[in-house]
Image 1 (cartoon, rainbow, N blue to C red):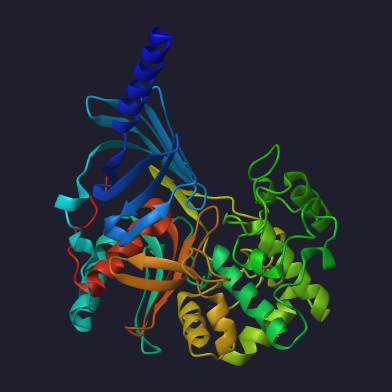
Image 2 (cartoon, rainbow, N blue to C red):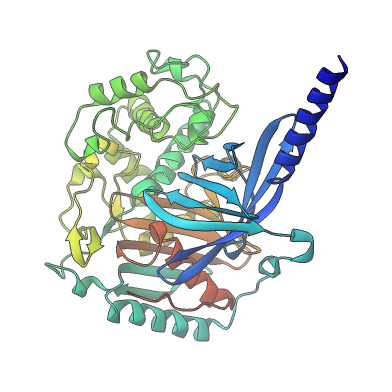
Length: 462
């Protein structure tokens, strides 16, 4: 018995020491086109279970929850489904050497022990807008640098107190088959903000209740008797992502039918019990767009025209049914710019099909916060409430500054629409060719750095 007790104690001590090797904070840097992005992983071990959070000091984000953390045989791995990011590395000689994978981009990442108590994060100091005239000159120089080095193409619009103070289209002439008639960009999931606005209009008009069950409209969907409109709006429904094909990942490059899409949603089933988690769901917004059409007996395009386009007198604003011909082509880069085959956008109506300009996106985000498109009650419901995703709006942090808005990505164009009420500042852009960062993140960091006086070194273009 004594030997067994000693063996048990030995195992207990061994496992405790083993877990202590990994518990704590670890810091590393992702190098993206010559620019370093620091990341801090904070690991805990309680009740024999590992958990962790992620800090991104340069982006002003701290405590991002990690969905899954494991540490087995000196191998640490973690995943965050909302960011579509994962890491796997091996602990050796007080370093964790591995790779970070986000949206298909694989980058080396070495993590080293980091004492947060001795390294106070200066990045979280209160930021103030710099002199705007000087900031805009820096932005102009930056965009000229990108254009000269054939690094990026797109368009940006900046509003201050509801009026445009800066706009530039850049890099497009460097791309193959440039045509000056092109005016708009695919904005991807920023479309979801438009869908949310129109759903809240139905709620305001008492045509829909935010607690209505999905089963009222689509009883054939798994868990539909538990899933509410609210949960679909804030990605807590448990529904998966129909955009991911079963046998062919990019199956929506070709025209499919509503019946096939519904079949795919049913096949994917439920990822978790509704309202117990958040996981970004294109399926939820596809169904919301269909519910909108069912209740109003109008197409998505007709609803968009009534609720957003006419009230704001927008031009150059199209849903997929309009088949716009003035949309900038998307490109990837491999020694030369290569055209990308993008979605068949009729497959993602209300999810990611809209094409427009950054100027229009700024008009829309300002109108939202000026209560011109939704009521005060609806706006408060749309806002993130301590979670990353609100109902059609999400938090976009930059150091101590919190912006609210939405990002959007197609297979080749990345867009952002964000607003900060404290500074009366809104920024919207679309990039249809990008060599400097993951999903346009590096571009956003650069622009915000110039506006808020944060040091920024131009990315080295290879």
